Length: 141
Image 1 (cartoon, rainbow, N blue to C red):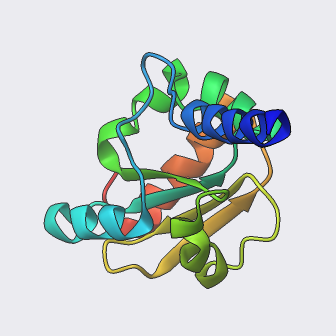
Image 2: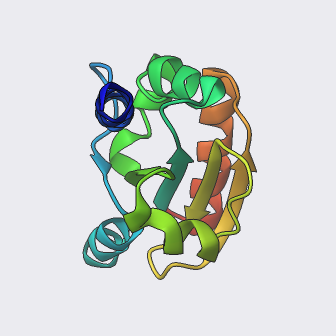
């Protein structure tokens, strides 16, 4: 019984940590469907961040990159979604985008067509360069 309770608490803590964003983070949607719906209304490109609470590079990106000064300039230019791969509701999206390792970041246009993708962590400066490149491909810079 104790083991079951501990496993439940660990899972609940993991899910809670996955959605706990630092101050200054972009406004993240919690699913690819929600993000795509918002993108169709706004015409903005989409960033789908596939991640997990147990993934150190994912948590570094979450803590240091997304809320960074270099990346803040891009917060309002995209629709952002943070997709926890441990949430069963996100299984079909992870399969659709071929997520085999994380962090896995998909950059899509407002119609859902892939512009680019990034697998693995990076610095704030390099991620900002990637965002600028993605915007230049969508003519939304």
